[in-house]
Structures are given as structure tokens and as C-alpha cells.
Length: 480
Image 1: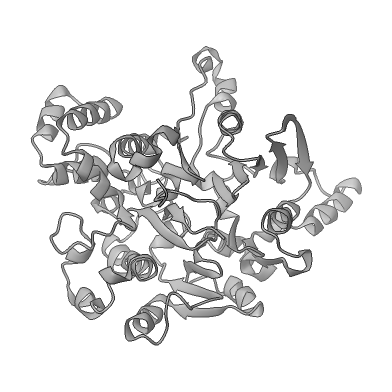
Image 2: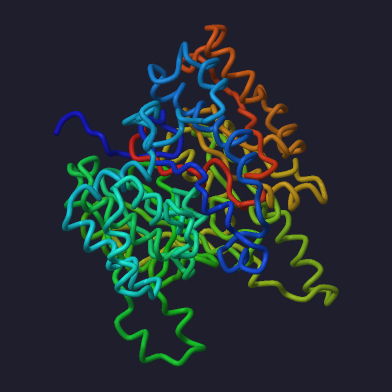
């Protein structure tokens, strides 16, 4: 197939297709006593998150990826209080094959009777539901069944399952690596059902037909059940998409984090090298802290030569200063708080190379993999590297940006000091609402806009602990 529909070889090539999931009714059912079990730090106001924030994200993506679906209609869409434009079950739904809603894909495959029966049985088994629940679910239409499997609630508002509120972070269900898709294995029980739904979609929906043989599933550790509890955590096979970055056609990054294990990373290295999908894989071990979660919470790429990063984990100056205090006996060693980087090459997989600092790795990617000059590589630091804003703004996703094209990123509107750092290197900042009006009027064009930070409203979204990078699963980017 010459005209590929699934191919990602960079973090900043022009975005052409991606998977998203708009906030569903399940987010409105997260209660304080269960919020952390369901991986939320707080409860959110669903209506504000949808209308006042996420809808802007969808409109921006449509203008960049599929403008025929929205241009000339913005006022009508915004005036419709029902929001039918955003609802897959509505005749007015935007129904783009470039900005693709996971709920729509799920609804499509549930038209197949065999898939319906198998998926409902699997979901009920995971959630320990009765056989009678399966019969109840199988009586629903495909559209209503898809909504129920995601939100946990039936059309009559009966709550059958816990919600899976993290599905808005579609980055974590899988990652496109050249023309392969790596499926995730979630570390937390709260994400098991969303991983199941994703597997059925990838294996059965026509959108993924061309790469059906290129789906990669990470095997379980077959001896896990034999291990004592204190050893089992390290031996689990868990991986989430926020810890995987396709930074160049030949180079993949995998984070070792709170959510992704060394065991899983080893399995990915083995499979990708055997299939000759990439030439090198760098493992980036970050502290196992809720503050960080995945590597894309501490750095993302903006341009071939520009990265946004949390300075306390990236900058060698921090380590050197700490080492001085440690040697003087004034500071305890914090080895667990440091980033460790090991790089594996396909031609010599048993001779890994250690890289000392995160900035060194990112510099190597820009220079060696992407052809930049060393003097042109720039780092934008969370909070402009000012105390205490670096940590504060990283917590609200200052480092979690989605590049819709090289040098044009979507980020949250609340990280003021980080935005100052972007402006200092020549970026323009514009509110999402203003940019949409400019696109609609023709004052600006998605094709010509450059070096721009798009400010997405974020009062509720930021409380969900994930940014625009998390809320996307690119499946097609233009090459360089």
C-alpha cells in the first residue's frame, strides 16, 4: 500500500491522523473516595472540562488535520448547546477519519455479533460481573454498548462498572513506531478495561487493517506468579504509551517509570530489534514518583532542535552541585532521584552505552538523528528554571506538549513562567479561542503558522494530570 495511513517516525512531523477520546460521563462519576484508585488526583467539573476546554482541543485538531469538517461552521457549532457536533452517536457528529474518536471505533466493531459477545464476556470477567449482566449488555445497540463499556453506566444511568476516566489520555493505549503499533500493558488495575477495549479496536477495526500483522503485544512474565510479593513488582510486564517516544525513524525512547517496568522494556527491545523496526532504543529511567508518572511529563519535543524539559532532571549543573554537597557530607545521596539512561543498538545489543544526562541524550537526538547543528539546539525549562515554578508548572503539564507540526504546539494556558521561556526564544503565544477565530476568518492559516504556543484552557483538564501530549495517540505524521 503506497499511500500509508499509519506511520509515525518522529514527535514533530506534521500531524495527519490521531486517536482521541472526549471526556465522557464516567469522569462525572469519579467520587473523592475513589479518585486516587481511578488515578485521578481530584474530581473534575465535567461540563466545564468539555465545553470550556476539551472542545477547543478538538476544534484545533480539526482545523489542522481536517479543516473541511469545521471551516465556515464555527459560529454554528459554538452556538449549539447540545454539543451534537462532538457526539459520535449524533447525526451532526464531525465524523473525521483524521481526528478519530475511540468511542466511534468501538461502536463500529461492536456491529459484528461475534466481537460483541467476546468483548462483553471479557469486560464482564475483568469487572467480575454476573452472566445476567452480559445478557443485559448484549441487548444494547452498538452505540449504547460502546458508551456503556467506556463510561460504566447504561443508558438508564445504572452504574455497572467503574468508569475508566483515563481513556481521555489516548497516548497510553498504544504507540505508533514507524509502521507498527505497540499495545500497552497498564500497571494499574483501573486501566485494565481500557487496554482490553483498545486491543479489540486495533485487532478488528478496518482503520488498522494495513498494519494488522504489525501489532506488537508484550508478553507476560511467565514466572511472575512464582515470585514472592516483594519481587513481583519489579518483574511485572507493564508499559504505557506516555513512556514511549518515537523521536526519529531509527530511534525510540522508552521510559522506566512508575508505570513502565524494565521487564517490559526488555521485551520491546527484543521484538523491535528482531523485526528491524528501529536501530537504537534508549531507556530513560526517571524517579518513581507520582509527580512524574511518564517521561512525557518531564520532557517533550517542540522542534527538531527545541525541547521543553524539567530542569531538575535534565541539567548536569544540578548533579554537579549535589555531588559537591554529598562529598562534603552536607547532603545525603539521592541516587533514586536521578535520571539514568542506557542506549541499546540493534547491531550490538549486548554492548549498551550509558548516557550521563538527559540533555546529552536530547542533544544527540537533535544532532545525530535529526541533522541539527549543536549550537542550534535549545532547551526550554519548565517554570523558566525559577524556584518554585519549575516543579509547580511541571505538575500542571508544562512539559507535556503536542506538536501539531514542527514548532507549533498545544499546551495549557496556566504555565506562565514556562511561556516566558518560550517567548524568549521567539515563540508567539495565542489563546485557542483567538486562533480559531483567526483560522475561521482567514487571518491566519494552519499551513503557514509557525513558532507558536497555542494556549488551551485548562482549569479542569490540568486537574486530571495529563496534557495535550497525553490526550493524543498519533497514527500518522508526515516525514521530514
